[in-house]
Amino acid sequence: MTFPRFTIEQSDTEFYTSQSGMALVGLAINRFTTLASRLAKAAPCQGIATADVLRCYLGLLCQGKSDFEAIRPFWEDDEFFAAALGVQNVPSPETLRQRMDKVAEASLWIVNFCTVEFIKKVKATLSTLPSGHMPLDMDVFTQDNSNTKKEGVSWTYRKFNGFAPIAAWLGLEGWCLEIEQRPGSQHSQEGFIPFLLRAIHKSRQLTKAPLLARLDSAHDAIATLVALIVEKVDFIVKWNPRGTDVPARASEVFAQGKMIKQDKKGRIAIMTETVERTYKDENDEEKTIKLRRVLRATERNFDRDGNRLLIPDVEIEGWWTNLSIAKDKVIELYKGHALCEQYHSELKSDMDLERLPSGKFATNALVMSCAGLAYNILRAVGQVGLMNKKQARRAKQRRRVKTVMQDLVYFAGRFIRHAHSLTLRFSCHANDQAQAFARTYDRFAYG
Image (cartoon, rainbow, N blue to C red):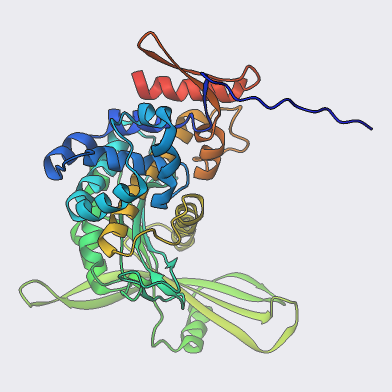
């Protein structure tokens, strides 16, 4: 059997790009944020403008690249990359690293501001829960940076050396409000209240719907609950059963609560109770608040492999809340908090942010803030371009950022510069992708 042989040629004049989606990223940054003008005032530098440096790095992140060295191909020869992002000069890897180090502290607050500004100006879809609440999820995640000497790398709760940033996510789509970089050994609750208040303030800039803050047991602290009550935010906070006699409390739930499942495999019961907790206010005066706690006790007679246990395995869970809805609805609403793990996975794997590129903590903090803005840009591209009936394979609120990169960012096209105009020309066989790209570009350029 004979196989066809291709003739390999290289054009002397034509320019092709495998990252047509940079045109969408450039529009998103330049039209829906004030990044360039703010950086020009806050972090002026000689040579390549700070705004050009950060716009180029955002372009890398939207391609799933975080290393500074990844800029080299675009620095050496890629006029499309510069034109798409609207930059005058593309920095070299060395310049990118040095400039990020230099402007890290001055630029951090600007990028954080633009992260929320983009959501607002792009008129992003923010979907609520069936209860009418806008979910506001905050959670800590870890980044494995073992065997490195980067500033801030320390032992994490996941039992490896790395970082432990915290992020805030809004809506069922999972829009990123802010990412705060933290050393690996920093406890989740340390410095959490200022972060919580910033997240609430930013959320209220974006939606008028009542907020529902969902937090895991690491934030089960009286200071957190008081702050949420003072800010008049509805909440579901996972109860931390530290110091609790689990068998005794479980027996109480089985005796007084509602049995929702009981068979030979085990039993599950839930109950609700009112608990009084005391705290000291800013004037050091002792005050008392009443809180509702939903408890669920589970007793299992078999292990995961189906082997019968000699002693039943007993587990108890609880949730603090100020909602007056049924106790089973409280548990159901909290389940959506688990989506945070998906968002963290997209940041770490799809955007290559498990191991951070710099040895300096301030620079890595800027990298993570840029990641939040890049994440929202990719989310917006997916919402506009990939959520119609043809592109959406299943009914959902969002598309994974990896899918957005594959379908629209890494979309090959021919770049044509002629008569003072720029053109992107796509293959005749890429009808659906070309239409999705054109629809997104029109929405960003003229919408």
